[in-house]
Image (cartoon, rainbow, N blue to C red; front, top):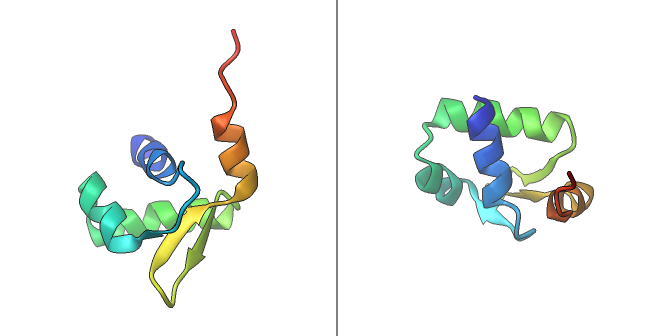
Length: 72
């Protein structure tokens, strides 16, 4: 599951809204996997979700954190 979380974060790293179906198709996730991963990320504030329009994007703080270069 950890790799699926990382995959979703990477997919959303551009900061734009992505449709649920697009994410699932790109990452080859079934509905249950997608729901589990996105609910976890939403619960802890990593992503924003628009349930009505069925799309998600990274939270601004998460996006800034992930954009930082790694340090040794």
